[in-house]
Image 1: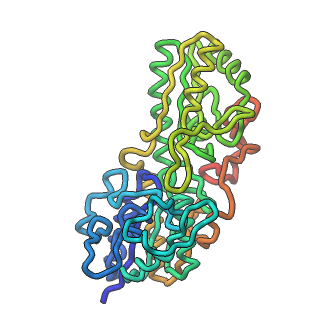
Image 2: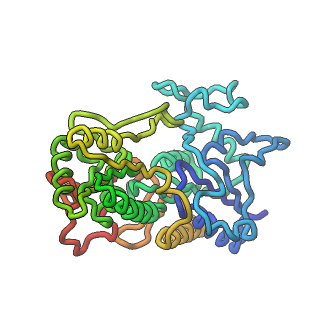
Image 3: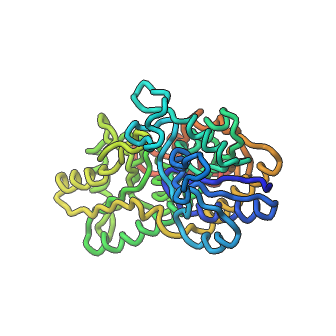
Length: 387
């Protein structure tokens, strides 16, 4: 019987996931493995019914070289994704076939369904599992590793904030998209002589905003790590606008940024793991700019445009190489690892590193707190992505 490896994509989608899936499938098939896709991330391990006559076709997708031949040409993920974490499951999210089971209840009322997930993994007879995701997805991969599952993690997130790696799949494309959109929007801001406020993804880390601002040359950048003094920001942007021959000014802002004495702007209901959607701080800045200057403001929230469409060449390269490294680990019998880039070189870290720290902008080295803009000098010896 051929050995079998499972693969899933969890959390939000980013460009490059399909390239990683394809590379892993092709490599493992060459080595005589079967590859089974688990659909919708960790949710598959709760919804697959572990008995012989169950129809699990909506949650499982056999993958072959032929079936993945063209998937690298598009963004998103053919396996789909979700933000489900079996160890942190809201009672209302428990599948019907598991509701009569006894589950460990956490202090916050959520349920730990890890044992149900382990039962499905045993049923699927997976020799190895590859999990592609951010902190949430990888934290459960870590849990499975501690439970004895042979798992390898691949980091992906637009925010580039997975602890233990310099780079995550999706980051380069998100920055490239942001820079292009900011520069495209300049034509409107300049033509109408207005302020331009561009809000970017970035819950706890402002690296995407910082590098996009650095590369697009925005006047100011407000990042999640540094609460901003609203009156000073308004004053500086007004001065930037007056000093620009085209009479406009540009400010990029992380969705997780907030004014001094305030807190991040949250909207809607919490997701499956308890995070509420961020967004609205850019709209808040627009309103304050209009109120205090009397000038019109263009506000653009880039949102899902940053993660839509195909990956750029760097994300294709890293995704393929991360998948190749994951295959190398599996074939060598070395699991419980996170593939990563450290100091510009491909390497691995123990999965236990996930959650051991926070990866955020090094404010003292790369950001001017007084001027609210990138401050990048003396780059000799620094990592490529300045993180």
